[in-house]
Length: 259
Image 1 (cartoon, rainbow, N blue to C red):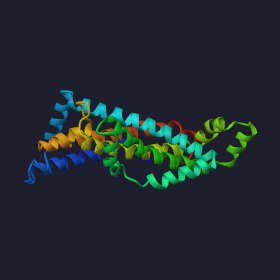
Image 2: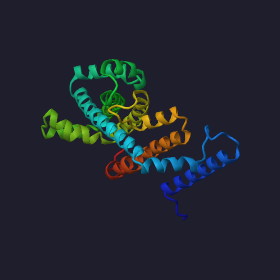
Image 3: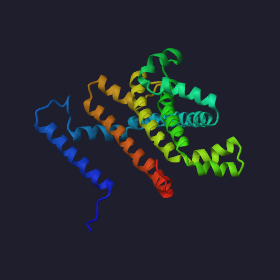
Image 4: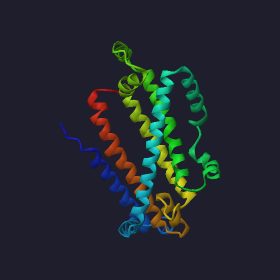
């Protein structure tokens, strides 16, 4: 039986092919470097920006903001979902909030957030929380509703109180849905963060990756724009493979659970 290559090897081969096509197109198609710079020029800017510390500082700020927003949003999502699962009035309230806010893009809230809270880190975190909160609540509620009845019977037999039942039965039994909601929330929050940083600019004298790209656009530094985009893509891939995939292998797949 022929041994299959690992996903990382396959992905690296395709990325290498794309980079070669990109370099050849930029060099020999006659396209202006302002429109499509060569790969070599992009990586030159990327490495120089990393070495002088500017891009690293922008990246760390963005990661700090999204970590804060994800932490707050997921905590609120768990509290809302558990409350909605345990009390009918809370479920009616949460269903109404989902109906209103879940379809609402974060970018549509930018004008109000700026008007109410100004331009700064706090406003960006609010948009991240909005992006992660509603997918988290939706997926957790779906997980609670699909929980096997035997799990509930176990909680009843042990005479668990509501808080203990939620902690020991509802949340562990809905862990696949929790991971799925967190992944969706992460993707939405990451996009909202970069968009917000482009609009809000720099707060406190320092901006994130979105601000890095925006500055490069103002000065018509196309290689710098692509360098910022590459960092965003690489972070997204690393989070998906090194965090979500690793967590799923050690929990959901190992436990034989399905989302």
